[in-house]
Length: 405
Image (cartoon, rainbow, N blue to C red; front, side, top):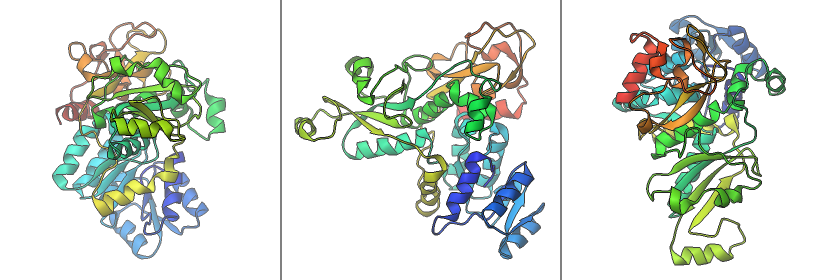
């Protein structure tokens, strides 16, 4: 396990309760936090700095704790690497090192998964290992629901998220009270509130199922009940019969879950679903929903499936169908340095990559520590040509490789 923040701590705990699994090594740049969590779980641990020390700790029955994720990624005793860091660049490097050392990789780092996923997947396929998004987040919960309705004979029409609250201009200062309630980093909390995280999740599912969005940022109607989607989406007109849509609703009961609209026009199915007590819709479009996603609590299945079955729950198998692009949260000025996801500078909106060919936008996952070349108005899209960056920057190099994968 690399990254022992809020989600990573939960994953380490969950592994300890799962038969057949053991967390054999953890890494975090905040070494004291990783050590404290190991102690809280009742694990004997050793602080290590080398591969020799790591192997000695494991063989001696202790949990090696280190500050360098590469030690974990390269450790011969590790079967599956889980990246739960919040670093886009480091997360991708850890994944690459693990793949090169013939380990399966489970990404709980959705930002790195989105922007570098196609390249990481290509490398994993070359090495004969599994690269997959992690269970428990909306995009993977959606993928499992889609798999289920496809098995039942329904074509996915819309993959949907259920959002409770949205403020595009949320920032790490304003969000502090909410972040403290949830034991979250304020910047990360702001990325949930401003909708960037939502868009990243929906781009991940879009790139897995060949999905597309109707408008930048999706429509996101406010509804009272999940079944109100039929009032706001005219699927006969909007769906092309092939590529699923990705979108979300705000305020729907029950909150916190996901939903999929599926299509089946067989008369027998319509007749059957018409008298079943479940409320799915008028047909031939039906809505299936899961009222929750549980993060680390349901994160073990994909780890087991990767190792035991060689099966990924979700991959960017369609490449970049969609991406999430940066928009200004406030008036920005030439020379300003962007501060990334959940910061003060920009929020992200999902868009179809086909609409970003002539003047491509700046992916929000690359919108950190780059300098603006011109003034940008509030809510204006930031383009790649609007920033100064080096082609040799590892982030941009890996992104171009992902685009070609």
